[in-house]
Length: 240
Length: 237
Image (cartoon, rainbow over all chains, first blue to last red; front, side, top):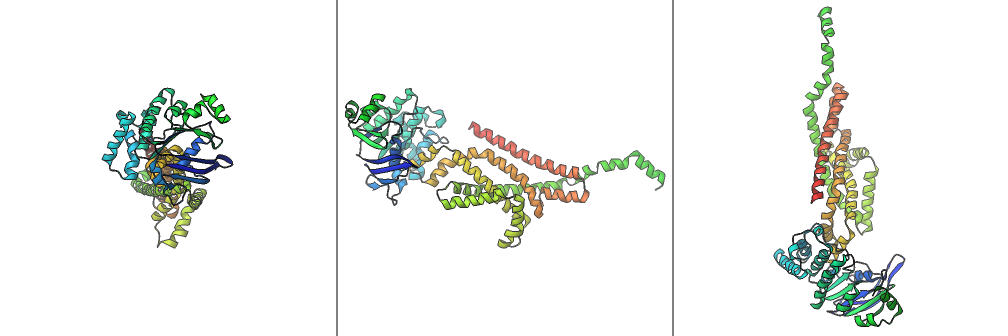
């Protein structure tokens, strides 16, 4: 589904990614953990080219993103993204947030888009907030709308960039529950997270990143219970 | 008239009286004439604001574009028209540039063209600042949904930028309305030019120029009240 080969990225002098290689299978849920500044978010943002990469290759569903001939906008329609700060459109209602891209980009008619939006709102438990503006939603509600908005494009994979990091603790659960449902439905997911419980329970695989490299990866139980690399050990001993 | 009769008239102060109300009479009898001039002032302002906004939007977007050439073009345009006096621009356009490209430009045409291009430069900077004030995450969210840059700009960024832009834009309108007085230099018969014509006939400086100033004040005040009203409405939205 997603394949990354020797990905390098730097911001000016600072090398953030120093050669990332990985394959993510369809329906797989991969959780990326690691200390801040390790390049997790940058790695995720490279996957849908929100960051321009310096070198390496990225394939999504067999199409090479990094090929200049590839229409990046078409690929992005197939890869949903959820941000730490939600980034809902403040001038649109919940419903409009969800239907904007499907109607205007994909050309789905308004009625079908609205039906789909209500379907998604039911899924994330926010049907009653359909006609409300983002400013009137709580953080957890905003993030659930953001997930619905990304799902409305019917993506083949979803990228989550620390989706619960800016939430009040009591709202983390509702967002994780939605993500868990999504994983159970078979969505391919890459989740950058500090929620070790979620990574362990929902993740099919955990990647530990540090200083721009994937240091260790494997089954969640193996990583959490029996980490091999000293850096993984030291990180986990601080967060668990 | 005998000397006595003249004495009576002067001593009762009739001439003093008539002299004292002369300015008032000049102003009131030419008020309609001046207001017609004010109408032309408004016309030049409105047209220049309209075209200026189009130019400002285009060059504001150029300034933010990824293309170095477009950014360079925008920088040159903005630098030139903000860095030279409008008065000089009007003279240059009317006597220099426009005759080369059009047949006998009227003062009105020259006024609208120059004021549009001039305000476009200021509005471009307002537009640029407004767009940059929109949270960066908005563009990323829009792009992550598969919108291309123009779609994201049009559907997501600009609808948010316009609220930020309205107060400085109203300010720019007010500046422009006052600055149109400079086109009297090429004899466009707007308010200031008409004021000059009335003044040079009767030499009632305080009344004529005072009246002209008051008419400007009323126009700019109306604009600023309008601005405050829209600002308040947007704030509650």
